[in-house]
Length: 561
Image (cartoon, rainbow, N blue to C red; front, side, top):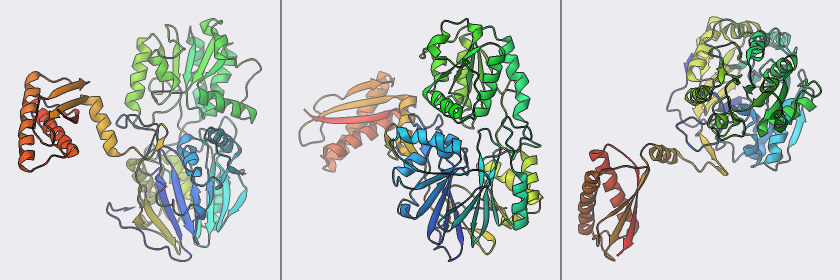
Protein backbone atom coordinates (compact mmCIF):
# COMPACT_ATOMS: atom_id res chain seq x y z
CA UNK A 1 0.00 0.00 0.00
CA UNK A 2 1.10 3.55 -0.69
CA UNK A 3 0.31 5.78 2.28
CA UNK A 4 0.23 9.55 1.86
CA UNK A 5 3.08 11.33 3.64
CA UNK A 6 2.22 13.87 6.33
CA UNK A 7 4.13 16.80 4.81
CA UNK A 8 2.98 16.88 1.19
CA UNK A 9 3.43 20.03 -0.87
CA UNK A 10 0.76 21.68 -2.96
CA UNK A 11 -0.03 19.65 -6.10
CA UNK A 12 1.47 20.68 -9.45
CA UNK A 13 -0.64 21.84 -12.36
CA UNK A 14 -2.77 19.03 -13.75
CA UNK A 15 -1.32 17.42 -16.86
CA UNK A 16 -3.49 17.74 -19.98
CA UNK A 17 -5.65 14.65 -20.34
CA UNK A 18 -5.23 13.55 -16.71
CA UNK A 19 -7.94 13.16 -14.07
CA UNK A 20 -7.43 14.61 -10.60
CA UNK A 21 -9.21 13.23 -7.52
CA UNK A 22 -9.32 15.32 -4.34
CA UNK A 23 -11.27 14.07 -1.33
CA UNK A 24 -12.35 16.95 0.91
CA UNK A 25 -14.03 14.75 3.52
CA UNK A 26 -14.86 11.18 4.45
CA UNK A 27 -11.32 9.80 4.48
CA UNK A 28 -10.02 9.26 8.00
CA UNK A 29 -13.47 9.92 9.49
CA UNK A 30 -17.06 8.71 9.32
CA UNK A 31 -18.87 11.68 7.81
CA UNK A 32 -18.65 14.88 5.68
CA UNK A 33 -18.12 12.82 2.53
CA UNK A 34 -17.07 14.88 -0.47
CA UNK A 35 -14.80 14.16 -3.44
CA UNK A 36 -13.85 16.57 -6.24
CA UNK A 37 -12.88 15.27 -9.69
CA UNK A 38 -11.06 17.55 -12.15
CA UNK A 39 -10.57 17.04 -15.87
CA UNK A 40 -10.05 19.44 -18.79
CA UNK A 41 -10.39 22.46 -16.52
CA UNK A 42 -13.78 21.40 -15.14
CA UNK A 43 -14.85 20.02 -11.75
CA UNK A 44 -17.34 17.36 -10.67
CA UNK A 45 -18.34 17.04 -7.00
CA UNK A 46 -19.52 13.67 -5.66
CA UNK A 47 -21.44 14.05 -2.39
CA UNK A 48 -21.20 16.94 0.06
CA UNK A 49 -22.05 15.84 3.59
CA UNK A 50 -21.59 16.82 7.19
CA UNK A 51 -19.78 15.32 10.16
CA UNK A 52 -21.47 15.35 13.55
CA UNK A 53 -19.46 16.85 16.45
CA UNK A 54 -17.83 14.93 19.28
CA UNK A 55 -17.85 15.77 22.99
CA UNK A 56 -14.60 17.69 22.50
CA UNK A 57 -16.36 20.14 20.15
CA UNK A 58 -18.93 21.81 22.43
CA UNK A 59 -21.53 24.08 20.87
CA UNK A 60 -20.93 22.85 17.31
CA UNK A 61 -23.96 21.85 15.24
CA UNK A 62 -22.23 20.11 12.33
CA UNK A 63 -18.83 20.10 10.61
CA UNK A 64 -18.49 20.81 6.88
CA UNK A 65 -15.92 19.91 4.23
CA UNK A 66 -13.41 22.67 3.55
CA UNK A 67 -14.34 24.42 0.28
CA UNK A 68 -11.17 26.58 0.29
CA UNK A 69 -9.49 24.70 -2.57
CA UNK A 70 -12.48 25.18 -4.90
CA UNK A 71 -14.02 28.47 -3.74
CA UNK A 72 -12.27 30.43 -6.51
CA UNK A 73 -13.35 27.83 -9.09
CA UNK A 74 -17.06 27.60 -8.37
CA UNK A 75 -17.88 28.49 -11.99
CA UNK A 76 -15.92 25.41 -13.11
CA UNK A 77 -18.19 23.00 -11.22
CA UNK A 78 -20.33 21.11 -13.75
CA UNK A 79 -22.49 19.26 -11.21
CA UNK A 80 -22.87 17.88 -7.72
CA UNK A 81 -23.64 14.15 -7.86
CA UNK A 82 -25.27 12.61 -4.77
CA UNK A 83 -24.98 8.88 -4.12
CA UNK A 84 -27.79 8.73 -1.52
CA UNK A 85 -29.77 10.79 0.97
CA UNK A 86 -27.97 10.39 4.30
CA UNK A 87 -26.87 13.57 6.08
CA UNK A 88 -23.19 12.64 5.88
CA UNK A 89 -23.56 12.79 2.09
CA UNK A 90 -26.06 15.64 1.48
CA UNK A 91 -25.94 17.81 4.61
CA UNK A 92 -23.26 20.15 3.26
CA UNK A 93 -24.94 20.84 -0.08
CA UNK A 94 -26.85 23.94 1.13
CA UNK A 95 -23.60 25.56 2.24
CA UNK A 96 -21.98 24.96 -1.15
CA UNK A 97 -25.04 26.14 -3.06
CA UNK A 98 -25.12 29.35 -1.02
CA UNK A 99 -21.88 30.22 -2.83
CA UNK A 100 -23.31 29.30 -6.26
CA UNK A 101 -27.00 28.35 -6.27
CA UNK A 102 -27.22 27.26 -9.93
CA UNK A 103 -24.88 24.28 -9.71
CA UNK A 104 -26.90 21.31 -11.07
CA UNK A 105 -27.50 18.65 -8.40
CA UNK A 106 -27.80 15.11 -9.78
CA UNK A 107 -29.37 12.28 -7.79
CA UNK A 108 -32.14 9.74 -7.41
CA UNK A 109 -35.74 10.59 -6.57
CA UNK A 110 -35.66 10.10 -2.78
CA UNK A 111 -32.24 11.69 -2.43
CA UNK A 112 -33.33 14.84 -4.26
CA UNK A 113 -36.60 14.95 -2.31
CA UNK A 114 -34.77 14.88 1.04
CA UNK A 115 -32.35 17.51 -0.25
CA UNK A 116 -35.12 19.76 -1.59
CA UNK A 117 -36.82 19.87 1.81
CA UNK A 118 -33.51 20.87 3.37
CA UNK A 119 -32.84 23.55 0.74
CA UNK A 120 -36.29 25.06 1.28
CA UNK A 121 -35.28 25.76 4.88
CA UNK A 122 -32.20 27.57 3.54
CA UNK A 123 -34.32 29.51 1.01
CA UNK A 124 -32.42 28.01 -1.93
CA UNK A 125 -34.11 27.06 -5.22
CA UNK A 126 -31.87 24.37 -6.71
CA UNK A 127 -31.35 23.06 -10.23
CA UNK A 128 -32.18 19.36 -9.81
CA UNK A 129 -31.41 16.55 -12.28
CA UNK A 130 -33.27 13.31 -11.54
CA UNK A 131 -31.53 10.07 -12.55
CA UNK A 132 -32.23 6.39 -11.97
CA UNK A 133 -30.08 3.27 -11.94
CA UNK A 134 -28.73 2.45 -15.45
CA UNK A 135 -29.19 6.06 -16.58
CA UNK A 136 -26.36 7.93 -18.27
CA UNK A 137 -25.75 11.66 -17.93
CA UNK A 138 -23.14 14.07 -19.26
CA UNK A 139 -21.74 16.88 -17.13
CA UNK A 140 -19.15 18.83 -19.10
CA UNK A 141 -16.24 16.47 -19.89
CA UNK A 142 -17.56 13.86 -17.44
CA UNK A 143 -19.67 11.01 -18.79
CA UNK A 144 -21.64 9.49 -15.90
CA UNK A 145 -23.37 6.15 -15.47
CA UNK A 146 -25.39 5.18 -12.41
CA UNK A 147 -25.54 1.73 -10.84
CA UNK A 148 -28.08 0.56 -8.24
CA UNK A 149 -26.56 -0.28 -4.85
CA UNK A 150 -28.24 -1.52 -1.69
CA UNK A 151 -27.79 0.53 1.47
CA UNK A 152 -29.74 1.38 4.62
CA UNK A 153 -31.73 4.02 2.69
CA UNK A 154 -33.59 3.50 -0.60
CA UNK A 155 -32.37 4.76 -3.96
CA UNK A 156 -28.61 4.43 -3.40
CA UNK A 157 -26.42 4.83 -6.48
CA UNK A 158 -22.83 4.11 -7.35
CA UNK A 159 -21.46 6.41 -10.05
CA UNK A 160 -19.17 5.55 -12.95
CA UNK A 161 -17.14 8.52 -14.18
CA UNK A 162 -15.67 8.22 -17.68
CA UNK A 163 -13.16 10.67 -19.15
CA UNK A 164 -10.35 10.27 -21.67
CA UNK A 165 -8.09 9.82 -18.63
CA UNK A 166 -9.82 6.58 -17.63
CA UNK A 167 -12.81 4.95 -15.97
CA UNK A 168 -13.54 5.52 -12.28
CA UNK A 169 -16.17 3.90 -10.04
CA UNK A 170 -17.25 5.58 -6.81
CA UNK A 171 -19.36 3.05 -4.90
CA UNK A 172 -20.87 5.46 -2.40
CA UNK A 173 -22.13 3.57 0.67
CA UNK A 174 -23.22 0.05 -0.22
CA UNK A 175 -23.70 -3.54 0.87
CA UNK A 176 -24.81 -6.74 -0.88
CA UNK A 177 -28.00 -7.67 0.98
CA UNK A 178 -29.44 -10.61 -0.96
CA UNK A 179 -32.90 -10.25 0.64
CA UNK A 180 -33.42 -6.45 0.82
CA UNK A 181 -36.70 -5.19 2.21
CA UNK A 182 -37.39 -3.17 -0.93
CA UNK A 183 -36.15 -5.86 -3.33
CA UNK A 184 -33.43 -3.56 -4.72
CA UNK A 185 -30.16 -5.46 -5.08
CA UNK A 186 -26.69 -4.10 -5.64
CA UNK A 187 -26.32 -4.55 -9.40
CA UNK A 188 -23.42 -6.98 -9.60
CA UNK A 189 -24.12 -7.60 -13.28
CA UNK A 190 -23.34 -3.94 -13.96
CA UNK A 191 -20.20 -4.30 -11.83
CA UNK A 192 -19.24 -7.32 -13.95
CA UNK A 193 -19.70 -5.42 -17.21
CA UNK A 194 -17.58 -2.60 -15.83
CA UNK A 195 -14.87 -5.10 -14.91
CA UNK A 196 -14.90 -6.46 -18.46
CA UNK A 197 -14.65 -2.93 -19.85
CA UNK A 198 -11.67 -2.17 -17.63
CA UNK A 199 -11.75 -0.14 -14.42
CA UNK A 200 -8.85 2.25 -13.86
CA UNK A 201 -9.69 3.50 -10.36
CA UNK A 202 -12.07 2.23 -7.67
CA UNK A 203 -13.12 4.47 -4.76
CA UNK A 204 -14.75 2.01 -2.38
CA UNK A 205 -16.65 2.14 0.94
CA UNK A 206 -14.37 1.04 3.81
CA UNK A 207 -16.64 1.25 6.87
CA UNK A 208 -16.91 -2.49 7.54
CA UNK A 209 -13.63 -3.63 5.97
CA UNK A 210 -12.44 -5.00 9.33
CA UNK A 211 -15.53 -7.20 9.76
CA UNK A 212 -15.18 -10.67 8.23
CA UNK A 213 -17.85 -12.36 6.15
CA UNK A 214 -21.02 -10.76 4.84
CA UNK A 215 -23.30 -8.17 6.45
CA UNK A 216 -26.54 -9.85 7.52
CA UNK A 217 -29.80 -9.07 5.76
CA UNK A 218 -32.32 -6.54 7.02
CA UNK A 219 -34.90 -9.34 7.08
CA UNK A 220 -33.02 -11.11 9.87
CA UNK A 221 -33.90 -8.27 12.25
CA UNK A 222 -37.64 -8.87 12.03
CA UNK A 223 -37.86 -11.51 14.82
CA UNK A 224 -36.01 -9.31 17.35
CA UNK A 225 -38.12 -6.27 16.49
CA UNK A 226 -41.31 -8.32 16.74
CA UNK A 227 -40.16 -9.60 20.14
CA UNK A 228 -39.93 -6.02 21.43
CA UNK A 229 -43.48 -5.26 20.34
CA UNK A 230 -44.80 -8.54 21.73
CA UNK A 231 -43.30 -8.24 25.21
CA UNK A 232 -43.51 -4.52 25.95
CA UNK A 233 -46.38 -3.68 28.35
CA UNK A 234 -46.14 0.07 27.73
CA UNK A 235 -45.17 2.28 24.83
CA UNK A 236 -42.48 1.36 22.33
CA UNK A 237 -40.29 4.40 21.59
CA UNK A 238 -38.06 3.85 18.57
CA UNK A 239 -35.09 6.11 17.87
CA UNK A 240 -33.61 6.06 14.39
CA UNK A 241 -32.03 8.24 11.75
CA UNK A 242 -34.70 10.37 10.14
CA UNK A 243 -33.64 8.96 6.76
CA UNK A 244 -33.66 5.26 7.71
CA UNK A 245 -36.76 4.35 5.71
CA UNK A 246 -36.15 0.58 5.75
CA UNK A 247 -35.95 0.33 9.53
CA UNK A 248 -38.99 2.54 10.02
CA UNK A 249 -40.95 0.35 7.62
CA UNK A 250 -40.16 -2.64 9.84
CA UNK A 251 -41.36 -0.70 12.89
CA UNK A 252 -44.57 0.29 11.13
CA UNK A 253 -45.21 -3.31 10.13
CA UNK A 254 -44.62 -4.59 13.69
CA UNK A 255 -46.84 -1.87 15.15
CA UNK A 256 -49.66 -2.66 12.75
CA UNK A 257 -49.45 -6.37 13.54
CA UNK A 258 -49.76 -5.66 17.29
CA UNK A 259 -52.56 -3.11 17.00
CA UNK A 260 -50.42 -0.12 17.97
CA UNK A 261 -50.89 3.38 16.58
CA UNK A 262 -47.75 5.20 15.47
CA UNK A 263 -46.76 8.84 15.91
CA UNK A 264 -43.64 10.48 14.49
CA UNK A 265 -41.86 12.82 16.91
CA UNK A 266 -39.35 15.44 15.77
CA UNK A 267 -39.40 17.85 12.83
CA UNK A 268 -36.92 16.03 10.60
CA UNK A 269 -38.57 12.65 11.25
CA UNK A 270 -42.04 13.98 10.42
CA UNK A 271 -40.73 15.71 7.27
CA UNK A 272 -38.73 12.79 5.88
CA UNK A 273 -41.40 10.18 6.55
CA UNK A 274 -43.98 12.36 4.84
CA UNK A 275 -41.71 12.57 1.80
CA UNK A 276 -40.98 8.83 1.80
CA UNK A 277 -44.70 8.06 2.11
CA UNK A 278 -45.72 10.43 -0.68
CA UNK A 279 -43.11 8.98 -3.05
CA UNK A 280 -44.09 5.40 -2.30
CA UNK A 281 -40.95 4.34 -0.44
CA UNK A 282 -42.92 3.81 2.79
CA UNK A 283 -46.05 1.67 2.99
CA UNK A 284 -48.42 2.91 5.70
CA UNK A 285 -51.77 1.18 6.33
CA UNK A 286 -54.71 3.57 6.58
CA UNK A 287 -55.16 4.98 10.08
CA UNK A 288 -51.88 3.60 11.44
CA UNK A 289 -50.05 6.94 11.79
CA UNK A 290 -51.66 9.60 13.98
CA UNK A 291 -50.59 12.88 15.61
CA UNK A 292 -48.70 12.56 18.86
CA UNK A 293 -51.41 14.47 20.76
CA UNK A 294 -53.91 11.70 19.99
CA UNK A 295 -51.69 9.02 21.54
CA UNK A 296 -52.28 10.51 24.99
CA UNK A 297 -55.80 9.14 24.91
CA UNK A 298 -54.68 5.59 24.11
CA UNK A 299 -53.50 2.81 26.46
CA UNK A 300 -49.67 2.70 26.54
CA UNK A 301 -49.61 -0.79 25.00
CA UNK A 302 -51.36 0.63 21.92
CA UNK A 303 -48.74 3.30 21.18
CA UNK A 304 -45.49 3.44 19.20
CA UNK A 305 -43.45 6.64 18.98
CA UNK A 306 -40.70 7.06 16.37
CA UNK A 307 -38.16 9.83 17.01
CA UNK A 308 -34.66 11.04 16.22
CA UNK A 309 -31.63 11.02 18.50
CA UNK A 310 -30.09 7.58 18.09
CA UNK A 311 -26.59 9.12 18.08
CA UNK A 312 -26.98 10.98 21.38
CA UNK A 313 -27.43 14.40 19.76
CA UNK A 314 -28.14 16.75 22.70
CA UNK A 315 -30.99 18.64 21.01
CA UNK A 316 -32.68 15.61 19.46
CA UNK A 317 -35.94 14.23 20.84
CA UNK A 318 -34.47 11.17 22.58
CA UNK A 319 -31.86 13.16 24.52
CA UNK A 320 -34.52 15.58 25.70
CA UNK A 321 -36.74 12.67 26.76
CA UNK A 322 -33.83 11.26 28.76
CA UNK A 323 -33.26 14.69 30.31
CA UNK A 324 -36.99 15.10 31.09
CA UNK A 325 -37.22 18.30 29.03
CA UNK A 326 -39.45 16.84 26.29
CA UNK A 327 -43.23 16.57 26.30
CA UNK A 328 -42.84 12.79 25.97
CA UNK A 329 -42.15 11.55 29.51
CA UNK A 330 -40.53 8.15 29.95
CA UNK A 331 -42.24 5.86 32.46
CA UNK A 332 -42.09 2.30 33.81
CA UNK A 333 -43.17 -0.22 31.21
CA UNK A 334 -41.86 1.74 28.23
CA UNK A 335 -39.30 0.17 25.92
CA UNK A 336 -36.86 2.37 24.04
CA UNK A 337 -35.51 0.72 20.89
CA UNK A 338 -32.31 2.22 19.46
CA UNK A 339 -32.54 1.14 15.83
CA UNK A 340 -29.26 2.55 14.52
CA UNK A 341 -25.58 1.76 14.81
CA UNK A 342 -23.16 3.77 16.93
CA UNK A 343 -21.15 6.22 14.86
CA UNK A 344 -17.56 6.27 16.20
CA UNK A 345 -17.09 9.15 18.63
CA UNK A 346 -20.70 9.12 19.82
CA UNK A 347 -20.42 6.19 22.22
CA UNK A 348 -20.18 8.20 25.44
CA UNK A 349 -23.20 10.35 24.60
CA UNK A 350 -25.28 7.34 23.60
CA UNK A 351 -24.44 5.27 26.67
CA UNK A 352 -25.12 8.30 28.85
CA UNK A 353 -28.63 8.53 27.39
CA UNK A 354 -29.15 4.78 27.79
CA UNK A 355 -28.34 5.09 31.50
CA UNK A 356 -30.70 8.04 31.95
CA UNK A 357 -33.53 6.23 30.18
CA UNK A 358 -32.95 3.12 32.28
CA UNK A 359 -32.99 5.21 35.44
CA UNK A 360 -36.39 6.58 34.40
CA UNK A 361 -37.75 3.04 34.23
CA UNK A 362 -37.45 2.22 30.53
CA UNK A 363 -36.20 -1.05 29.10
CA UNK A 364 -33.58 -0.02 26.53
CA UNK A 365 -32.99 -2.37 23.60
CA UNK A 366 -30.00 -1.67 21.38
CA UNK A 367 -27.49 -3.37 19.12
CA UNK A 368 -25.43 -4.43 22.13
CA UNK A 369 -28.16 -6.57 23.68
CA UNK A 370 -30.39 -7.60 20.76
CA UNK A 371 -30.24 -7.98 16.98
CA UNK A 372 -32.14 -4.80 16.18
CA UNK A 373 -29.76 -3.17 13.72
CA UNK A 374 -27.71 -4.21 10.74
CA UNK A 375 -25.05 -2.09 9.10
CA UNK A 376 -25.64 -0.52 5.72
CA UNK A 377 -22.06 -1.18 4.67
CA UNK A 378 -20.31 -4.10 2.98
CA UNK A 379 -18.20 -6.36 5.17
CA UNK A 380 -14.87 -7.87 4.10
CA UNK A 381 -16.41 -10.79 2.22
CA UNK A 382 -18.55 -8.50 0.10
CA UNK A 383 -15.63 -6.17 -0.62
CA UNK A 384 -13.46 -9.08 -1.78
CA UNK A 385 -16.35 -10.29 -3.96
CA UNK A 386 -16.50 -6.86 -5.61
CA UNK A 387 -12.75 -6.65 -6.10
CA UNK A 388 -12.81 -10.01 -7.88
CA UNK A 389 -15.65 -8.89 -10.15
CA UNK A 390 -14.33 -5.41 -10.91
CA UNK A 391 -10.58 -6.19 -11.10
CA UNK A 392 -9.60 -2.51 -10.69
CA UNK A 393 -6.13 -1.38 -11.73
CA UNK A 394 -5.96 1.12 -8.85
CA UNK A 395 -7.85 1.28 -5.55
CA UNK A 396 -8.46 4.22 -3.24
CA UNK A 397 -10.38 3.21 -0.09
CA UNK A 398 -12.81 5.92 1.09
CA UNK A 399 -15.44 6.44 3.78
CA UNK A 400 -13.77 5.30 6.96
CA UNK A 401 -11.29 5.91 9.73
CA UNK A 402 -7.61 5.10 9.11
CA UNK A 403 -7.98 1.53 10.44
CA UNK A 404 -10.88 0.91 8.03
CA UNK A 405 -8.94 2.31 5.06
CA UNK A 406 -5.91 0.13 5.72
CA UNK A 407 -8.04 -2.99 6.25
CA UNK A 408 -9.76 -2.30 2.93
CA UNK A 409 -6.44 -1.75 1.20
CA UNK A 410 -5.18 -5.09 2.53
CA UNK A 411 -8.24 -6.82 1.04
CA UNK A 412 -7.51 -5.22 -2.34
CA UNK A 413 -3.93 -6.49 -2.24
CA UNK A 414 -5.07 -10.02 -1.36
CA UNK A 415 -7.23 -10.07 -4.51
CA UNK A 416 -4.25 -9.18 -6.69
CA UNK A 417 -4.20 -5.38 -6.89
CA UNK A 418 -0.49 -4.39 -6.87
CA UNK A 419 0.57 -2.86 -3.55
CA UNK A 420 1.82 0.30 -5.29
CA UNK A 421 -1.64 0.79 -6.79
CA UNK A 422 -3.47 0.78 -3.45
CA UNK A 423 -3.53 4.36 -2.18
CA UNK A 424 -4.20 5.12 1.48
CA UNK A 425 -4.94 8.83 1.63
CA UNK A 426 -6.66 11.35 3.88
CA UNK A 427 -8.80 14.44 3.43
CA UNK A 428 -7.10 16.96 1.15
CA UNK A 429 -4.62 14.52 -0.42
CA UNK A 430 -4.59 14.82 -4.22
CA UNK A 431 -4.44 11.79 -6.53
CA UNK A 432 -3.84 12.03 -10.29
CA UNK A 433 -4.82 9.31 -12.76
CA UNK A 434 -2.50 9.39 -15.76
CA UNK A 435 -2.28 6.63 -18.40
CA UNK A 436 -4.06 4.18 -16.12
CA UNK A 437 -1.75 4.83 -13.15
CA UNK A 438 -2.96 6.57 -9.98
CA UNK A 439 -0.40 8.45 -7.90
CA UNK A 440 -0.41 10.78 -4.90
CA UNK A 441 0.83 14.18 -6.09
CA UNK A 442 0.23 16.66 -3.27
CA UNK A 443 -2.20 18.09 -0.76
CA UNK A 444 -4.61 21.03 -0.58
CA UNK A 445 -5.77 22.97 2.47
CA UNK A 446 -8.38 20.98 4.34
CA UNK A 447 -9.52 22.05 7.80
CA UNK A 448 -12.62 21.21 9.78
CA UNK A 449 -15.22 23.91 9.10
CA UNK A 450 -17.53 24.35 12.08
CA UNK A 451 -21.17 25.42 11.89
CA UNK A 452 -22.17 27.14 15.13
CA UNK A 453 -25.74 28.43 14.97
CA UNK A 454 -25.82 30.91 12.10
CA UNK A 455 -22.05 31.20 11.78
CA UNK A 456 -19.96 29.09 9.42
CA UNK A 457 -16.19 28.83 9.75
CA UNK A 458 -15.83 31.42 12.50
CA UNK A 459 -15.16 28.90 15.27
CA UNK A 460 -11.50 27.87 15.42
CA UNK A 461 -9.61 25.22 17.35
CA UNK A 462 -8.62 28.01 19.79
CA UNK A 463 -12.31 28.78 20.32
CA UNK A 464 -13.01 25.15 21.11
CA UNK A 465 -10.01 25.01 23.45
CA UNK A 466 -11.50 27.97 25.37
CA UNK A 467 -14.88 26.24 25.51
CA UNK A 468 -13.28 23.09 26.87
CA UNK A 469 -11.45 25.15 29.49
CA UNK A 470 -14.68 26.89 30.43
CA UNK A 471 -16.43 23.56 30.88
CA UNK A 472 -13.58 22.14 32.94
CA UNK A 473 -12.50 25.08 35.11
CA UNK A 474 -14.88 27.98 34.52
CA UNK A 475 -13.99 31.63 34.10
CA UNK A 476 -12.28 34.08 36.45
CA UNK A 477 -12.56 37.80 35.79
CA UNK A 478 -9.91 40.08 37.34
CA UNK A 479 -10.77 43.74 37.87
CA UNK A 480 -7.68 45.96 38.13
CA UNK A 481 -8.09 49.63 39.09
CA UNK A 482 -4.91 51.44 37.98
CA UNK A 483 -3.74 54.98 38.43
CA UNK A 484 -4.40 56.79 35.14
CA UNK A 485 -1.54 56.57 32.65
CA UNK A 486 0.43 54.08 34.79
CA UNK A 487 0.76 50.38 35.48
CA UNK A 488 0.32 50.93 39.24
CA UNK A 489 -2.55 49.43 41.22
CA UNK A 490 -4.69 52.01 42.98
CA UNK A 491 -6.78 49.38 44.81
CA UNK A 492 -6.49 45.65 45.55
CA UNK A 493 -7.50 43.35 42.69
CA UNK A 494 -11.07 42.10 42.63
CA UNK A 495 -11.94 38.57 41.45
CA UNK A 496 -15.27 37.53 39.99
CA UNK A 497 -15.89 33.77 39.75
CA UNK A 498 -18.16 31.89 37.35
CA UNK A 499 -17.88 28.11 37.50
CA UNK A 500 -14.43 28.57 39.00
CA UNK A 501 -13.49 27.82 42.62
CA UNK A 502 -10.24 28.99 44.25
CA UNK A 503 -9.04 29.28 47.81
CA UNK A 504 -7.99 32.63 49.24
CA UNK A 505 -4.36 31.51 49.36
CA UNK A 506 -4.40 30.88 45.62
CA UNK A 507 -5.90 34.29 44.93
CA UNK A 508 -3.39 35.98 47.23
CA UNK A 509 -0.59 34.27 45.30
CA UNK A 510 -2.16 35.46 42.06
CA UNK A 511 -2.32 39.04 43.34
CA UNK A 512 1.38 38.96 44.25
CA UNK A 513 2.16 37.60 40.76
CA UNK A 514 0.21 40.49 39.21
CA UNK A 515 2.01 43.06 41.35
CA UNK A 516 5.35 41.69 40.17
CA UNK A 517 4.23 41.64 36.54
CA UNK A 518 2.98 45.24 36.77
CA UNK A 519 6.26 46.31 38.34
CA UNK A 520 8.04 44.85 35.33
CA UNK A 521 5.59 46.67 33.07
CA UNK A 522 6.36 49.95 34.83
CA UNK A 523 10.09 49.45 34.28
CA UNK A 524 9.37 48.72 30.60
CA UNK A 525 7.10 51.79 30.42
CA UNK A 526 4.12 49.70 29.33
CA UNK A 527 0.90 51.63 29.97
CA UNK A 528 -1.48 50.63 27.14
CA UNK A 529 -4.67 49.14 28.58
CA UNK A 530 -4.90 46.12 26.26
CA UNK A 531 -1.28 45.21 26.91
CA UNK A 532 -1.74 45.49 30.67
CA UNK A 533 -4.88 43.33 30.51
CA UNK A 534 -2.89 40.64 28.72
CA UNK A 535 -0.06 40.87 31.27
CA UNK A 536 -2.46 40.58 34.23
CA UNK A 537 -4.42 37.67 32.71
CA UNK A 538 -1.26 35.69 31.99
CA UNK A 539 0.16 36.34 35.46
CA UNK A 540 -3.04 35.14 37.14
CA UNK A 541 -3.33 32.07 34.87
CA UNK A 542 0.27 31.00 35.52
CA UNK A 543 -0.09 31.50 39.26
CA UNK A 544 -3.34 29.51 39.52
CA UNK A 545 -1.89 26.70 37.42
CA UNK A 546 0.99 26.40 39.91
CA UNK A 547 -0.92 26.88 43.16
CA UNK A 548 -4.27 25.15 42.51
CA UNK A 549 -3.58 23.09 39.39
CA UNK A 550 -6.59 24.68 37.74
CA UNK A 551 -6.62 26.56 34.44
CA UNK A 552 -9.78 28.64 34.16
CA UNK A 553 -10.30 31.11 31.35
CA UNK A 554 -8.91 34.32 32.85
CA UNK A 555 -10.25 37.68 31.69
CA UNK A 556 -8.58 40.85 32.94
CA UNK A 557 -10.34 44.21 32.87
CA UNK A 558 -8.26 47.35 33.46
CA UNK A 559 -10.09 50.45 34.70
CA UNK A 560 -8.85 53.89 35.66
CA UNK A 561 -9.17 54.52 39.38
